[in-house]
Length: 304
Image (cartoon, rainbow, N blue to C red; front, side, top):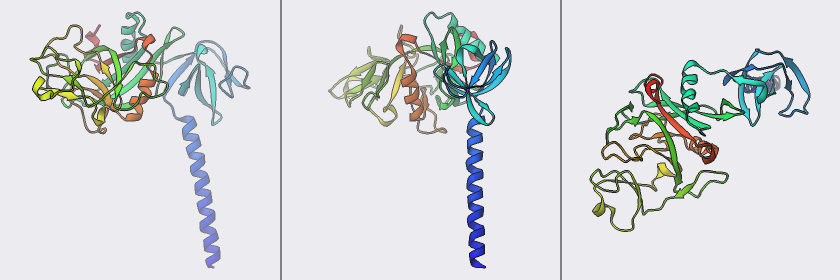
């Protein structure tokens, strides 16, 4: 009897494991990130290659669910397996808000990479981070959506030093930085920080909102400053807010950096998990003039 019971338990576990693996495989294949529409009649391929076996041919205007894009190929689900469609044959479906946001960058010459950090309300401290890139003349999603946090007091259109808010607007990126060695494959300029590096938020100083390297006692030189080699700045990038011209009191030290966690907002920066920061920094290419847009959909309507 014991042997029979043991055999039954083992059989049950084997079946459950098989079902779980099957479910996970199906979920992975069918996980939908966004919609795409066929621009013309085109083939679905078994692999991400034009020479690969054709699985099906879809007609123009057919809408499909995509789980992502790698290079020039979108991944879809066909017969419960991953299949691929060439980027040239489809366009992505964007929401009205996404269309309005991306249209702002069509007026900015040479800007082909965009990071959006959007919240649901001006007081919200959580944001969704999405990346877009212009490929073959069209905007397309780049990396997968990310969770992020902003200032502890939400967004503002009129930022002031020390208000704990993140500035609404569109900004270019400055240098990437970090206390760690520059990651392999990163195209951005990168500045490795030391214990002598500071960002100055002293409104009375001529160094306000500037990165300074100083080997003396910083407390004697400035009334207020940030150390650039602490743990949240293992990797990050400068967001060019209030830099040209620098207006004292309008806010300083606005960065993209690593978060403390999804429920812990910043003092005004945009932050996300370390793996996300690294993905963004490796994706961004100075030649493509990456910019970040921050705010709510409503607050960004008036932003040029």
